[in-house]
Length: 559
Image (cartoon, rainbow, N blue to C red; front, side):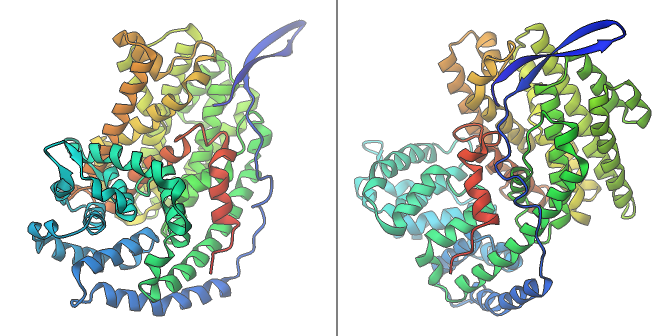
C-alpha cells in the first residue's frame, strides 16, 4: 500500500463550514495511460495462426500417445508441453498416458535414475495430481551425515529441477523442506558463474519458481530460456510460437475492450482517489485463465476485480467512517433505493455495481446458472462488511486478537469473492455440485485466502503500521501471543508455507471436483505470490508487473 496523508476537505452546509478529514493515499499514477485503449483485431490473421497450429498439434499428439517412446522421454515431453502452457490442447491424452505410466511404475528403477530424470518424473506426476513418493529422492542423501550428497552439486540442471520439485511438497515431507534450503542456497552461490541459457534459467527460477509464477508469463519465459529442451521435439517450437502469437492477439483485443469499458464507466472521474490499474488487473486474471477459450471468464472476473479495487480504495484511502457505514449498509441491502442515503461521490459506483451484477444475472438466467452470480454477490457483500470491521478497528485504534483478525482477513483477502467470481464465466462445468463445493469453504480455498492475506501483511506491515494505528496480522499476532516482531513474522511465514502445502495436497488425486475448477484457486495464489514476493508489486507495478505486462502485450514473440 502507498503511504497515507490526512487531508482536510472543506464543505459548506447552510452557513456552517465543516472540515472532513480524509486519509488520501499518494498512489502512483498509471504507467500505461491510453496505451492499450486502441487495438483492431484482424480475424483473418487470427485464423492464419489457428491453421498454423493444426499440423504441429497433430504431430505432438502422436508423440504423446506413442507407445514406443521411453517413459522418461515421454515425461520430459509432457513437461515441456506443460511449461509452454499447451497442455490443455492434449489434456485427455496426457492424463491417459500419465495414468498408465503411474500404474506401471517400478520404484526400484529410481535407484538408477540421475537427479534430473528423477526430478522431472516427480514434477510431472505431482503437477497432474499423482502422488509420487518423495522417497525417490532418498538416494541423493547421505543419511549418515543427514546431508545431501556432494556430487549432485555439480549437476546444476538437476539441482534447478529438484528446486522446482520442492515447491510441490505437502505437510510431513521433510526431505523436500531440506531440499529447498539446500538447492536454493547452492543455486544462489553458483548463479554468478553460469553463462548462456542456464544462467537465465537459474536466475528466473530463483526469482520465481515456475510452480509459483504466473503460468502465462512462465510459458513465455520458458520458450525463451529453455530453447534446447523445446527443440528436442521438432514440432514444439513451431506450435508454441503460433500459439503465443495467436493468444497475444486475443489478449490485446480483450485488454482494449476492458480499458474502454473502464473509461466508459468513468472510474477515474467518479473515484479520482482510486488506483488506475486495468492492465495489472487484466494480467492478474489472465494468470488465472490461461486458456484462450475462457474469454467470458476473463472479462467478467476482471470487471469484478475493478469493482473490488474501487471498493478497497474507498475504504482504505478516501471515505470517512460514517460514509463507510452507509456504503456497507447499501451494499448489504443491494437495492437502488439505498442509493439515496449515500454521499454523492460514491453513488455512481454503487449504480455501476448493481447494473453489472444485474446484467450477469440476466445473462446466466438464460442458462439456469444465476445461482453462481448470487454466490459472487453474497461474497461481495461479505467483503464490504469485513472491510467495515477493519475500518472500525482502525477508527477506534483497536488491535484485534489474531483469531479475530485471521477470520476477518480471510474475507478481506478478496480471494473468496474472486474465486467464486471466476465461476461466473466458466460455463456449464460449474454445476450445483461444484458451486456447493466452493460454498463449503474447503481447506484449499482457505489456504489460498490465508496466503493472500498474510503474504500481503508480511511484505507491507511497516507501511500499514504508519497509517492511523492500522492493525496488521503481525500486530495482532504479537499482541495475542506476546511475541516479538521477528517471531511473529517467522510464524506467519511458516503459516504461509503450510498453506502452500495444503494447496498442493488439495490438487492431488482423488479430488472432489475437477482440476479445471481447482485451477482458479491455485492460480490466484500464484498471482499474490508474484505480486507481493518482494514488495507491494500491484500498487508499485513498475517493480515487477510492468515487465510482465510489456512482455505479454507489447513484446514480439521470439523466433
